[in-house]
Length: 323
Image 1 (cartoon, rainbow, N blue to C red):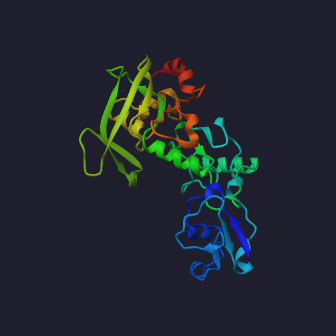
Image 2: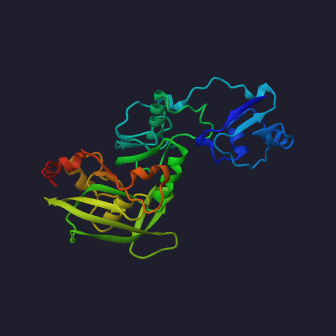
């Protein structure tokens, strides 16, 4: 007989899901049979396939040793870069300053070196994450920003932190503020833009219109002009809705595309600046919980802000490049 002890990060999982991850060599049909035959128990009692696990539960397995054999594992995330810019860290979360050009998650163009694989390597080498111990949980990002956008991203170290923060993000109890540089000077120094955004998957692009269409979704973008000079504007933005490419597409739709944006911007204007990256950064997060946050309540009313934002600190220099 062998046994597993359920950790906090695996609590709440179904028994069959836990076993599938823990014992990849055990066929599912046989696993279900063993559960029915009481060769797999929880706390020495009969278990059901859909039993939800609790922290501290002991799963007892009266099955052949061959199903416990593991081949030598080489984790892909150990090939990721060690480079991380950490804004804040404790035992539950990490706030990271993602650099422009780095993917948040793997995609078809890059699988190994992304923000989340760098986080996994960092925590693995610190001894805070071991895939062999965390049978169903892995560190995860709570929010994500586009590859060519820089700024603060939240990573959860525990299943509980991930669950709470995902809900807080959904309920708009975490406020995200961006800085950007626009071509031109908006007529109003502050306001809320509204429109409807529609995604075109084949072109990997979104389109904004004033009226609603069949597949479009409402977008609301709050902004405040901080500084204007030589037909450029430094602007702070708060996302009231979070849609793909919302900031870039929304300002472009009103005639003020972002400086350096090759997808929604104007190439003839960008060329004058010589920039090869867009001026957009998620520079500040504010935790504003209106409902219980459990063990993360200590974050309530706290804000985190990047000290250095290259295009804000060098705004006057950008204005002198011929725009």
